[in-house]
Length: 146
Image (tube, rainbow, N blue to C red; front, side, top):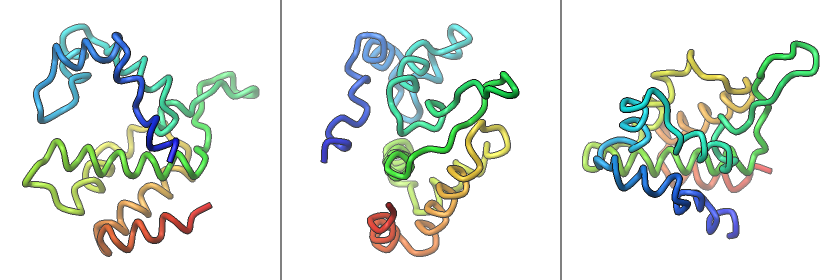
């Protein structure tokens, strides 16, 4: 319950809210427009650094390689990330949404992501299940994950 209640609470901070209002378009993230205007998005950097359901939050410097590497996400945040992606797809696509849309979006830039292999595989499995079996079965399965 608390995880859902606090989901994306940082969007109400001035750093994110003002950008959201200024660059709102309805069909894509306002952060994309901010990125186009400045070459980066302060709102996105703020958001991903405070919301654990974004895989971008889960990177750290590897003690051996001294490089930024992906860290495996805890299951509870992968579940939240799945829900977030489905909701975003529904909002941005509107009537054009179907259960394959979140998977298609995920696969479109899969090769570019810095995401832990296990996290990526689980998210893809859930998105594929959504496409093939629908929301009811997928959410039923998600509730069994610990």
